[in-house]
Length: 498
Image 1 (spheres, rainbow, N blue to C red):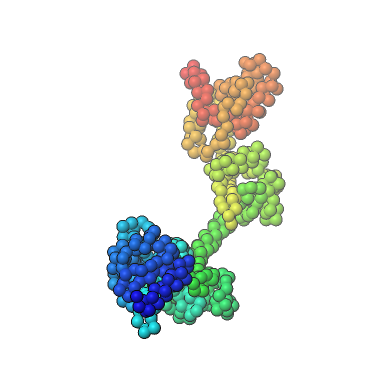
Image 2: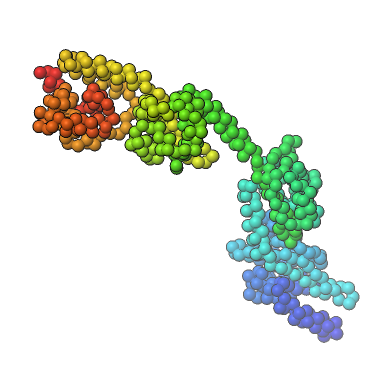
C-alpha cells in the first residue's frame, strides 16, 4: 500500500473520530459517490440503524428517501443535496423535508450544507454532507404560520434589519384591499402602518429599537387611495432567527358606525320621550329610582323635576294603592313587560287619576331599566261610572231590565277593557264568595244579612273586603266583574226566567 493511501486512511479515521460524537449529522462520500461512513446523529435523522440503510451510494440514497422543499414541492433527484455533493458542489442552508420512501409517515426537516475536502494536490479526497435536524423548529414555524393565517385580527410582520414586510395575513389584505405581493417586500416607509399615529415619533423610535409599541390610534392607507381609522400595536418577535416586529390592528370603522347608529337611536328615543303627550317615566330596574320623566308626566301629576328625579317610586308614592305598586313591579321583574294595567295615581295635590299603565324593560348604557307609559283614563272611567250609576237607578224599579242590561254591559266591557290584574275568585274567602253571589242576585245588605243569618255590619265588612280584593268600588262593578268571569250566571238565568 502506498504512502498516499495510508495517509488518506489515517486522515479519514481521524476525521471520523472527531465527528462521531457531534450533534450535527455527517455523511462522508468517496469521490466515486459511494457512502463511506455516517455518524450516529446522521443515522438517527434518517431513522436508520446502520450505514447500509442509507444506501450504498448517492443514487441508492435518492431511491430510499423522498425529499420535498418547505413549500411542499418535490425535490428533483439531481437537486438532492447528496446528488449535488456527489458532483462536487458546495452549498449552505438548504432546507428540505426528508421521509423514508417506504414509510412516509416518518419525516424530518434537515438544514443541509456541504464540504469538499481536497488532498495536497487539490483533488477531492472526501465529500462531506453536514445536516442539522430542525424538525422541532419547522413544526413550531408551521404552527405559527397556521395561527398567523387563521388569526381574524389583521396583522403584518416586518423584518427589523431592513424594515420590510415579510408576512401578511388574510385579515390585513381583506381590511386594506391590497394583494399579497403588494405588501410582501414593501418597506414600512412605502406602506406606513404608523401614519398619523397618535405618537408617531415614539412609535418609530420603538420600532427601530425593536421594543413593544403600545396600542394607539392611526390612519391606515388603503389600496384604493382611501384611509381607515385603526388601533395599531407592535410586538417584537424572532422569525427564522431574525428580529422582527409583529403589527396587529383593530378596525375602528365598525365600532365607529355602531357608535353613530347608537347615538342616532338615542337621539330619536330622547325626542320621542320628551315630545310625547303621554306621561312617561324611566326608572332603574334594580332600585326603582327615577332616572327621567317627560314634561307630560310633570304636568299630569303636578310635580317638578327635582321632586322626582333620583327618588324611588316608593318615596314619591304617587301610586295610590301600595299593593298595586308592589304587584306591578313584581310582575315587571318576572315577565319584563306589562300591557294596559289599570292603576290609580295620586297627584302631588292629592287628586286621584285613573291610568292604564304599560311598561317594558329597556337597557340604558347597559343598565336594565323600566319604561312606564301612563295613559290617563280618568274621563273614560268617569263616563263608565256614570253609566253604571244610571243602570243602578234603573235596577231599583226594573230588575228584569237591569239584569239584561248588566249582561250586555259586561259583554261590552270584556271586549274593550284592558288586561286585568290576575285576581282569582278563589282569592275570596268562602263567606265573601257567598256575599258576592247574593249581590249578583240583586240582594241588598239587609237581605243578605237575613239570608246568611249575619249581622248587617258583618255583611258590610265582607262586602268591603270583597270590593278591595276585586279592585271594584260598587255593586254594579262587582256584578260586572263576576259576569266577565262567567260566575253565578245560572242564578241570573233562573231569576230572569222566573
